[in-house]
Figure 1 (cartoon, rainbow over the protein chains, first blue to last red):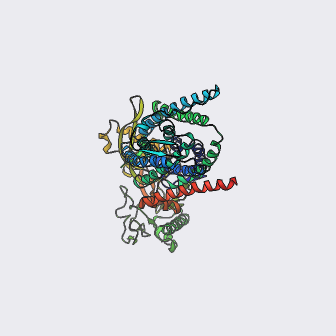
Figure 2: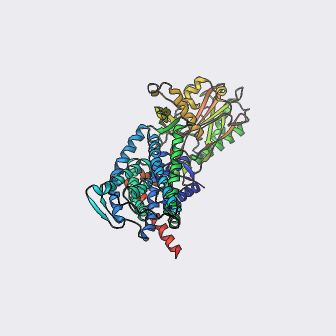
Figure 3: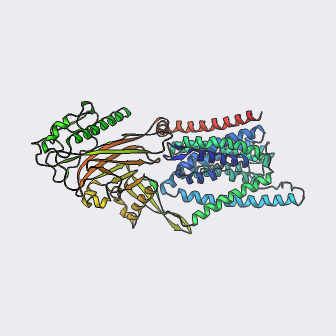
Length: 304
Length: 333
């Protein structure tokens, strides 16, 4: 069934969009990532203009993560205080990000910038996660007792403005979470992603949060950041397509619920290996596209 | 707009029918003077005289002086572009001895509505060659074009920079129609002379124009060709050289498919009557392509009150998220 999207001004098969939303939603619930890093490239692949794909992706991720947050919240797996701190940084970051996005659109370098940031962040984050979780898995196999998380005194303990995060069982400075939040907000606006793939590992490895609350907290922050990004794109770049978002999120919210349920049955290490492999896969694909000679060298855009 | 559109469509169809009737009654045989009484038998509600929209026809070289704009032509109030031609303008005496031919055309619809489930549409163009004299020697040719609103387009070309492909050169192609279709009775270069093609901008490459781009890039033509190639690949530029069928040198019909990815605007349909590679007559009609219903409402809201639109997008997102969460909770019980 073809459906004409009012803002994107293209006609797309509605079932393709529903399926896409469902797939992304499943990943969202499973790993606590919004799935935007898959959504934006896939939307462009089915013929949605890149600018619309980025802005509408943010709107869809907002819905999917709200659904996910509700599921995690009922299990008490959301650290609202940490979420609030991350969020404060995130909102600031997304304001800057939308400005940068507008500038890049004018210069015609959005595509390159998005691709480069994808390769950089996905590569680093995916690689680190894979190594760490493979080690953890190997330790579990060899029968050695799981190593307790080292209570090292890292930067998070030295910096000022300390705050107690009860749900995460932490007493750390608020500056690192603020910065992480800002970075995620920036990427959310530029890449149309929630930023979960950066935030989840950052929360585990940099802040030392327990894995149990990481996913819910990450979704909590993503929900707000993508909400703000949606509003900013709607008012500044006019590229949010409600019809597209609605189709994606109908599939997405259902997928997120299934994913959240399914995720409880898997072990944390397995989850992390899965996420790491997926992140690396997308990274390699984008890197290949950057280097390989494209079929079509020319592209069109509306002149200012 | 819709009401006017349907009235126009009806009028157009009636005019075409009446024209066919007149032609059948006339046949190619009767003498030059017999045209007037036959055409005066046209039914009054059809608007009697045929309605032309858009610009008045270009006067072909060698046409009888004063023929297209005879006294009595009037402009309808509220529709400044509608020029009504008085009937019987080719009556004996006015242009005796000339074998002027006219093209009369109508479209299957003058309004295309982009609904939520819009998946492309097809416009049938049909018409007749109206003669007040015996047919010329040689077969008449007919060219039909439909063009969407023309806008400037930024074209960018990728180049390898530091090992990766990135947009390097860019230029603006000053005018490129969002949609363009040409159908004719034969290959354009055989049917039409080069000067006539340029004058009426019939072939696709006369429609895509780059004037200011010469200064930006070394090879502006490559960029112009890229516009044509990319839009052709998307089905937005269609060149079908032998799609117009002419029956008995008099009636003709063709169809133009509008793809699903068209944009809003006024599309101009032109029907050219060509003889000996010269344009003899031109009929121009406007096809309004409009978003309707939900599509129209959402688009207008997103442009006129973007904040409300953004809030609506958020509300829809949160409602869907909450709804799904609740639904699954109920399912589990």
